[in-house]
Length: 256
Image (tube, rainbow, N blue to C red; front, side, top):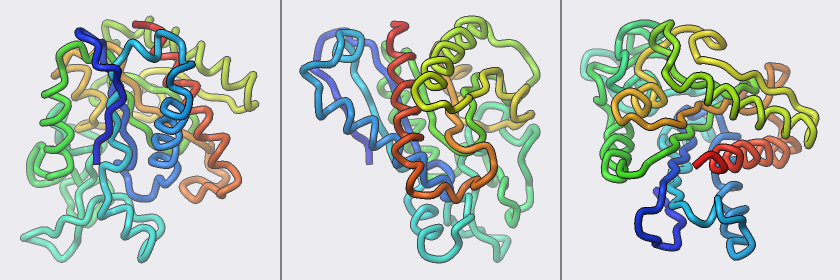
């Protein structure tokens, strides 16, 4: 399911926001739908830097995996695609994009959580994102993908230990959002390149959007918490985590 919010202004700059790539990260789609609600429930009173953009949302990239995590295995990560050569099921969708695919930080074993798939963009979910985002790539300025956990705003690169050409700008925006969040909710978010904060991993959607489509403002948002609850974040923290995601999205939108 994809949703868009726009006043259909010619030449609008665009922002893409997605969630639910990894099945067990329930706070991710909850946060993306919260952002949609916050924007649409008071659209007429939003500042110009919100209203003069076209917003595109895909709250749930991995619905089959998500439902499996709800009903069978709370910590399931991958999609539910069966394999021809293994009894194991599923591909890690955030190791399946065609940038740094199969290089590092993933597995060739279909039974592993980080299985990168039989080929780059082999999965229908990956293909859906690639096809749609390519279609809206004209004036696409920002690509935000929401995950959990660790409380971090991370930016390219993840598949190689290299500084991206927009690293200083991305660091500045992330730092500003982190300060706003700390003042609002008391939570601390780290900011930095993916390879520095989470380590090297290829095949991620963020590196793909940055390198293949030349989108400038690309982030993976790792939501609450820092590991006490981990993926099993209690319901009482949904509102706070979602607010933090919303604050970050607005801070990015101010830039263009």
